Image 1 (cartoon, rainbow, N blue to C red):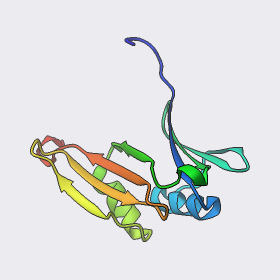
Image 2: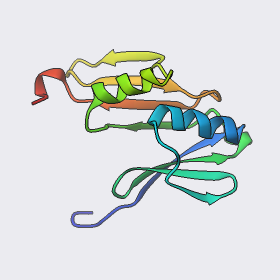
Image 3: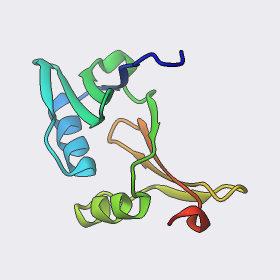
Length: 120
């Protein structure tokens, strides 16, 4: 895989499309980047890295997605200012931090952060 560009699409299956889109917009603080079709919205997190919400009630609540934004503390604080608070906040033995959110269907959205002592 060295030298190969990979497009990453992480999917979140939901039962109520409008509710899910609104929740993800609140979590991220931005509207979807584009509409794939009437029951799928996509947000670009970084170049070649996207998450999407898709109406698939039969799979809703089983998605697990984690990403590491550039600034963990800023992301968590901004989401909280928009009314989205993590269900759990953990620090692993190696110092890596994780805030875990659950959307209204129970899908898990994890936000990771580098150990505090590694932040320049």
